[in-house]
Image (cartoon, rainbow over all chains, first blue to last red; front, side, top):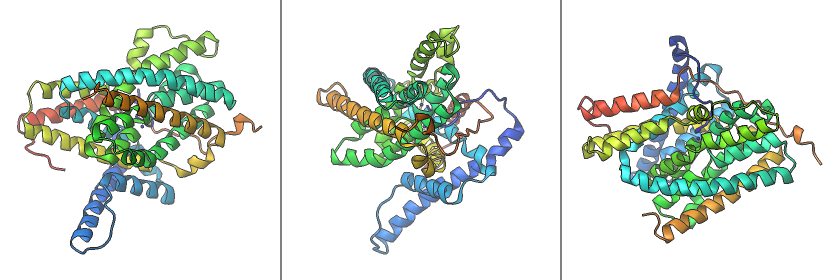
Length: 364
Length: 47
């Protein structure tokens, strides 16, 4: 998991320092300002439509946040003073996921989560094989192929960053793979909701599809949320199930490259798996466990759910801010083409899996 | 055929590392907010 999430950098070993925290404040303020501006614009358009009868489209705050972020990042650029804080979008994203656990009863998590795990396992085998095949056909460097396969099958940038330390790729390979995955995530934001509407998909089925097919955690939840609030929640569940595989896949690649003498040996495999496991999933499960146990009243669950939406607001703004449109065209055609073909394959496979699940009544 | 090595992004990926562990902080803040809501210190949150 945009676990990456992300997304951009993974959690760090750098100790908590007040100076480091203070440096994040301008960027955090920018994230929230963009998110709030998105909410204000949504309301402004609604008022102009209903009270002044102007013909204006209904644009959700989610989409406004991305549009504003994209405009700022690509027209004006992000000043250095904002960059450390913009990177905290990852924290808000994970906080939103933890809090949205209140909306899931543990039995739902176990049922749909188990189904997701099965679908993810099928998706992983097929997508890793397809990306490897495409990488060979288009003669990409082998480690770049590995990074693209890991990033597109699991959770985007987070998985690539996790693999970077494990398979020792060239720095350029990492940059190329990340740029390709971010570009593909941006494409998914536009294409997935359109396809969902064309196919008249339900909120749950669409959310599962977005969670299973879109790489970065942030883009995945955003793609779900663009279709509807419920779809966003189900995208969170499917995506967290997918992200939980990150350690196993990265370990597999690390062992493979070590066996060829091109990466370090992994001495303690269990420790490796724990280090790579996205821990925020435990927070999601903990909140879901508490909600299932009746700890919260209905209005308290509403409050927790609303808090998660507040947390997602700056995270969505961060997605727009870190999307560099120049990288869409500047990374060379070959990795992007491999990524696009692989993503189309993954999207079709997961769409088929989701349809199969819902038509056969495996999911409810 | 174009050299694959030339297929590079124009700008290298420059990650800004967070000065904290985002996973643990997200869990900590999430549980703290849940406790504040559960014990009525935060009453109602609208969106």
